Length: 311
Length: 280
Image (cartoon, rainbow over all chains, first blue to last red; front, side, top):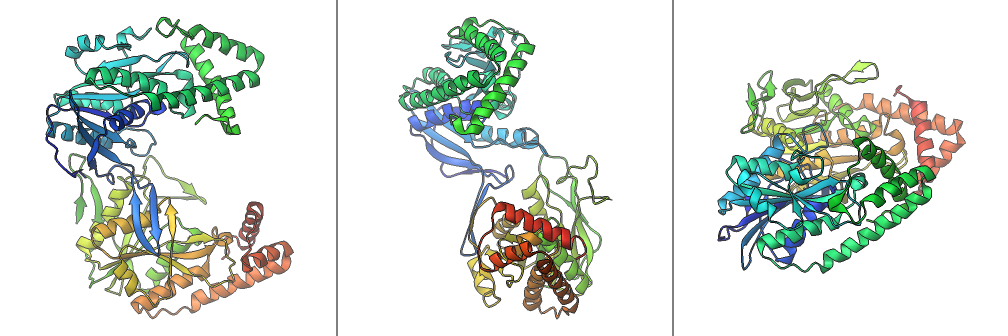
């Protein structure tokens, strides 16, 4: 089990920007987009076989040519303002005997990522993931920023379109970030690294649809680009956002057509109440959220099965 | 004797020797319990019986299988077993095991730790059936996957066929890959099993693999018992074809290299399974 570095670049006070897949792939889209924008170069990987099963084999003429595993790769780039290390994991290790991230392997992989960060002199880590929020899908998602130490709070308060957990309606500063996008914060703290997790808001009723949500990735990227002093061309991401928006719009229309009128009306009213007012959103009860999510999921999924899924 | 693996984790015995085998330059033959046409477990059991092999080592299940209880199959409580065997022959080590539910890489490493470090194996052979749309009346071929081209060359002349495949990897392919990283030459033997015999015994395919192993290792196996089983199964299949024109037409189409619809596949498999049942 270990790390393979193809080269050891000289970097000055680099920051690590890391992500793994999660709800809406918000973090990983943001990190990959930034990585591609700055043209970062691959310089290492975590050997996968202790963490993941192979996902593809290539056999040609009776010879085993290739066994492919999910990758966990490191990239670097020197920019005008900051040197950057990126880590992109294609999969999170799962808890023994379950399909969910967790267990000893998750802790091991988090430590390996930070081993590389520390080796190159990194003192600051950014991670990104998703925040399930009671927002409308036409609203601009905010970014929930979760630092791993008190000393970062005032800095985080200065980020644009960003809130702390204590600013989130009804949360009182409490919450839970599941999987490696959250765990890395804790492991970084244990090893003396500053870290901030940027969670892009995704409407909670979309969580069951296993679709990407690039609108939130864009919000995360807007914040990251300011922090890092990097100008980003969002045009490609904007096209992706437009495609997904259209898809959700189609599903929504289909939903209103198919749902019993009473249910459709209830959902429509609720969604309308959140439209264009993400930062003033009115709270709904947990019971309401559950009911809405269950029924929207059911109908959106039906739409998807009929081939009208956006992605 | 036992061994542990892992840094910074709970120290657990991964395998346990009951006795030290007397071996000389052996090859390792591996088969997992869950297999099409019951092929791998039947071949391993047959081989073990013929060479009077007994277990000398086993992999402990706790790291690789959920142990919150036991599964019951066909009225019998099951428990994962992963055992190494050897017998009169000093050149053969046989492994029969359940496929691990988690920690697959570590499980495969453990197999090879035992085989390489304690048994000094020189070659690896894995066995598993591959389901195909062929008729039971066609000769069974063995498709192969090698992890080293030199080993592939050495086994020319045994009537083996090369496999081509891209997709989800089987555990045996993973094992071959792990063996290659240790520079152990290995081959996966994939005898073709007609899909409608996948749920029962495919004696012909079992015999085909045993014939290869017999020739490769000079075992001198007397095949009269398995020949009887093959003959009985063929007779029963002929009887079924006489009783059921539908089954006969399906088999005839397969014999002519024609494909069946999914529904016809299912019907043929069901009819054969019901007729042969567990009797064979």
